[in-house]
Amino acid sequence: MMARQLRTGMPTFEREKKQRFNSRFEEGKVFGYLKNLIGSEFLSEALKEITDFTCIAMEEEHLEDMIKMRFPTIIEEKKDGGRWSLVEWWRHDIPTDAFKDFFNKEVYKAVSKRHIKPLSCKECDTEKRLSILQKSFDLKMEEMEIVSFYFLKETSDIVECFLGGRVADFGNLSTFRGSGHNLLGLERKRFMDVLADGKLFKAQILLKSNRGLGIAQWCIDYLSGLTEEDISHDFFKKEGEDALDISDFDISEDEMAVLDTLLKSGGRQNILLYGAPGTGKTSFARSLAKRYGKELYSVKTPETDDHKERLGAIFATVNMADRENTIVLVDEADEVLNSYKSLFFESKTNKSWINQFLESHEKKVIWITNRSSEVDPSTMRRFSFSMEFKKLNKDKRIKVIKYELKKKGLDDYFSDEEMKDLCTAYKVDAGGIVNAVNTLNVASCKEKKDALRKVMTVLRSHAKATGENLDGKNEKEFDAYTLEGLNTSCNLKDVVSSLHSYEDQGGNKKISLNILLHGMPGTGKSEFVYYLGQRLGKEVILKRCSEIQSMYVGETEKNIARAFLFI
Image (cartoon, rainbow, N blue to C red):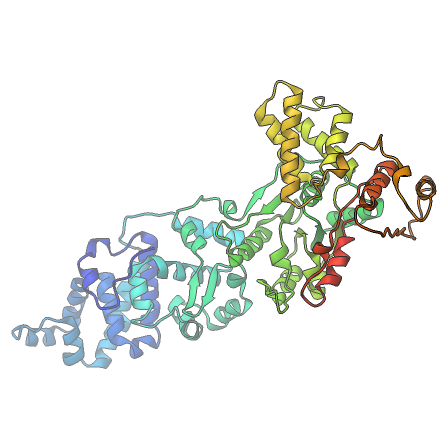
């Protein structure tokens, strides 16, 4: 961004006449603004400032020649006095009405000519990029004029000097609302309509602040040619076609029937995938795109972690997506969707913004979140369909690791028994499995035992980092375990036998089984639970009291509900 040193007067420009304009685009726009101001009420309200603006834009010598031709008598009378200050001429020697008439006719004509045919030979691709921006966001002509002005206000010294304060401060919201149409040469009603629509603000192209209106930095960088010409690189990436088959996911026929109807429809669809991290939500979105032959646009997360930039990226991606052939993926959308506010949690997203956005676009968008409990009910009602993803069990982990090994050409590397042992011992999510397989590929181990050790190390570290159970009990073989050593109030063999019978009959889906084990510490209660898991082929999911209890009112009850949410 250029340095600002112009508010004190004109000398800065006088020292840099040859570099007055950075490009033909800038020159054309500056003379367009000047022409519009001369033809408006600003000529009467800010005649001196517009005269200064004209002197700088078209060079004072040129304006002097025009004044000499229009007012030859006055110029001759003052020539001998040595008063050759242009400002002094019109302020003291030329009647104001005559000078305004001079501007309305001769100056207006000269300025209009420069607006149409700029003299600068310096070309730039700003106009081309503006055209791409317009197409990408589906912007109107009036919106593009607004964008162009605020871009020049940040990059042109002349525009910032005269239109950022001296003639008027068009960076001020009330000033721009009241007189921006005059500056840009737009019809008043259409100008107010595009401001009221607020599309430029929703797209995070224009920003409001205590200082007034301004243009987003990403837009300045793009129009200045500092980023790639393809604007999509700033907002989304196209996901590859490599994805699991839908059959690899535990999705019911009824759920798939609903998704089939929604994704084959022609209208707007908002689909919410929620559940614990690493349960395959993102992979499932990729698989849906693959199944229906559509491109998947995954919205990027800004490097600056700026929430407004994140919203702008979502808006831009949805606008650029093709209605028929594209699915938009908004991954990690927790902060975008969670508009719930409490004493301890402040949402970054305005509820009305997300609700309006969900209802206004006409594309197919998949939203992924881990914390659906903090999504406002009014927002949840706007989703066409919501799907819960539960934590991976042992069988699903085996399926994921087989798929990842196959992708690396290592499908026969481990035996089924070795993969079963890995997935039983380490209850990690899909991300942990992918990391482990990638490590194996990088290591290129020649010996399987070395590879197995490395994979186990990665899985163990991932499980520890994500808070999974690492007390070692799930790794034990219970061949030597006996119930005879437990002193209990009932026959444990009968308990195990009853549970086996329940499982053999397919279980009663409407009735849950609850078992209370109580007694002194060290009497074998936890060990018996792990033994039950091994005998029934079930995973044991450990939930500690410290994870449940909370100092905040209502949070303990929520944690109890969450404890069973992904089981």
